[in-house]
Length: 329
Ligand SMILES: NC(=O)c1ccc[n+]([C@@H]2O[C@H](COP(=O)([O-])OP(=O)(O)OC[C@H]3O[C@@H](n4cnc5c(N)ncnc54)[C@H](OP(=O)(O)O)[C@@H]3O)[C@@H](O)[C@H]2O)c1
Image (cartoon, rainbow, N blue to C red; front, side):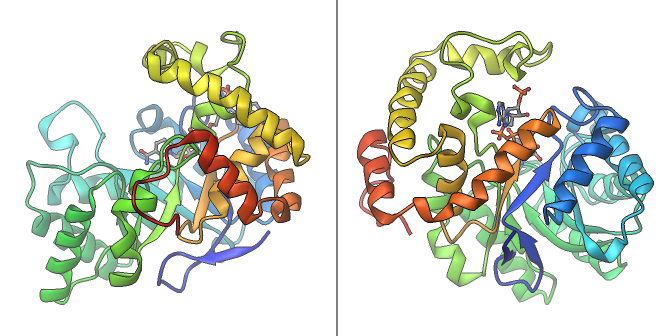
């Protein structure tokens, strides 16, 4: 496992990390979580991603209990939470000083830790002044409850505004953003955020590198019974496959599979290594509903050298979705 700085911060995160969305607290209980986490940790993964909104806090409970039973030294790994979707009452959601503070305290309890290494604003909140959220994050950092704070799916303008507030008021600025990034979704990471990597030293912890599993090829011939798209509560995800865009993506997966096989890779390894090939990516957050998937995905790391500039160019030509008018990096 290689490690990258989380943007300009001094925190070194593993190139592949492990997230809890959909899996922990739904497909994965504490016993399986112990196996998944132990496998990840033994392979050098040191960043584990979670959120108050994942299975209404259950994902954090399962991860917290599993890590507690594993008995890892707290200084050997980093763990995150995200605030935004805490509950249905007006005070239980969004990025007000109240909810940011309450949600942090609740996440610390569920995860059974004294501090969060990374705390993300899961979405922008147009009902809260950015200044209020920046102050709330800064105060949690001053109290030792959070080490680094950041955003998820914010626009470059919103991130710049938060950074400007922090700079002018001598508060702690955001260090990282968690955007979706994969072969099909490129705009934010490759275009919109470009000025921010230098300006504020933005790190990125990117999500859904396999586009929820579509980039494994498992949906090429229908929806497997034991797959994410078939889970109750995720009908909206399944519906996306049956749109013109979804059908186009499935056709592209088949073409990408041919390209991947030509260079001796399965499609999902190509997809994961393609994300890693972007130096603005600090860590690629893997999702896995069982240990064999995780082991399989980790095995991609032995083939990094197969992603050459020529292969990247062939992928760009095949997908025709490279953000216009810009070099990729
Ligand atoms: N900030 C945000 O808004 C946000 C949003 C989404 C995710 N995230 C974070 O990013 C993490 C990763 O996202 P993701 O789970 O969507 O990642 P992903 O890699 O796109 O999808 C992971 C899913 O694909 C399937 N899969 C993975 N490897 C496989 C393999 N080798 N063979 C067959 N199937 C395989 C599994 O689902 P099945 O086995 O169930 O089919 C697995 O749970 C999340 O856990 C979360 O921490 C953040």
